[in-house]
Amino acid sequence: MNIILLGAPGAGKGTRAALIAAEYRIPHISTGDIFRKNIQEGTPVGLKAKSYIDQGGLVPDAVVIELVSGRIREPDCKNGYLLDGFPRTLPQAEALDNITHIDVIVNVEAEAGALVRRIVGRRVCTACGKSCHVDTCLQDVCAKCGGSLIQRDDDREEVFRARLRVYEAETAPLIAYYTRKGIVQSVDGLDNIPEVLKVLKALNP
Figure 1: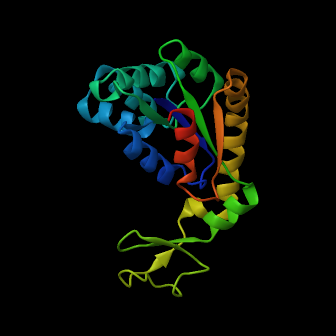
Figure 2: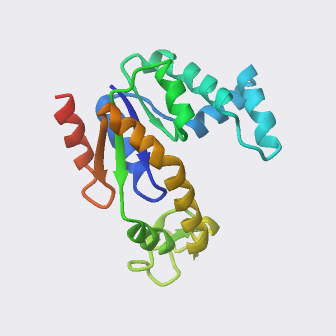
């Protein structure tokens, strides 16, 4: 099954992606991973992407599509794959339709206010990287290793709200595009995580 995973920052995409990939034994493909792999290996398209990244610019759609197209043609994708972080724009979605067939869009939904509470309250241990929420943290000390807990810069409310606005602006057209195709399945990002597997198994028992 070829799946695209959509969801706002903090909606719980990562956890659900791992669950889906393990259940269906398909690779979890993120654009960030593709960029890093191609840049590290020095491929022509990787070097092309690096030239934009090094200048602080956005990698053009044509380059991103070339990277994704190459990745989904690799042998481990023969039984399907889970795309995470691509497509981000309508032109990318339209280009993707020309190179592959997508079976389902899993849209992880969550109300913005709930996401803000979740992310702004997150604290991360500087020693082991474990995270917790201020509602359950033991003061400013990690329960796992005793390290110091901090709030990451990108978890500050003003920064996170800006990320949400960008996501909504980019994703609303994508949801409409795939809804017209009848392949969007929405799951609650604040609900029981295994629910996503029930949704997928109902489509592909």
